[in-house]
Length: 118
Image (cartoon, rainbow, N blue to C red):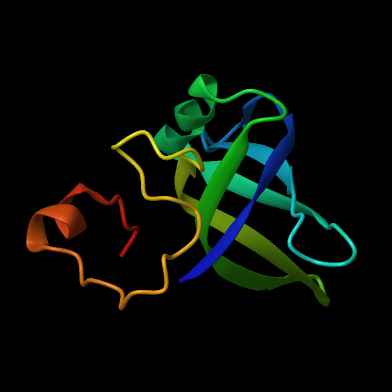
């Protein structure tokens, strides 16, 4: 599991392929480095609608997995988002930075609410 935080730069339209597969991509700009990075993530299938409640310029935290594959002697890497939340602390999402105290393990109820693909 990996995590990145930043501002949404652009949200692309959902792409539907002849097989019925759908995906939606978005880009966030990180600002925690000396040189901000634009990082593209993707959501697949029923997760595409998650982006409907977000807008360009909004601060978010993205949890993702790295997926790699080979096709015709070329190698591809996708950052597959499995959780996105507003970086603002509104009671439903954690603050983007730790307060320095020890991390608390999630309860079984918290784990059941995550849509983990495995």
